[in-house]
Length: 129
Image (cartoon, rainbow, N blue to C red; front, side, top):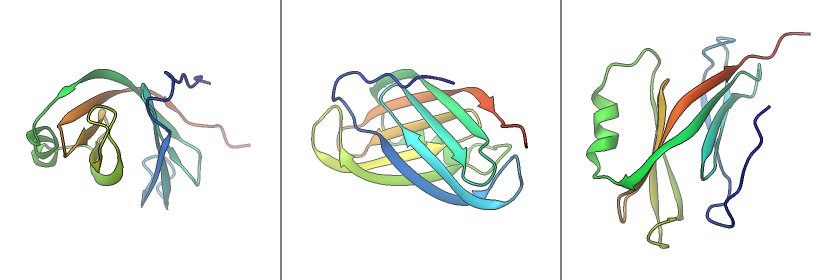
């Protein structure tokens, strides 16, 4: 499918899990979230349906970018997660706020405001065999 490109050692792969009802199989299952420097994936551990997101913009944003997503109406329930990690920008260990919706994924450092916005790109739903 899509090859993962690494830009040096800028960021290790982040892997998170969220127990949620899958949009495809409608079963409650771990949704595996992988975040890389230039792309991200959300894959259902039950049926394998995978949403692909690609990096669209980076910059310094205030916390309203996450709050705005909390206040928007969404087709599917958005997820708001946190991960403690070394920031790509400020190089300090800090909480990274992560918002995942049906159209985008946002990762923002609470320390310096460095933000990566990934846009939904493609959906892969494996055929049942």
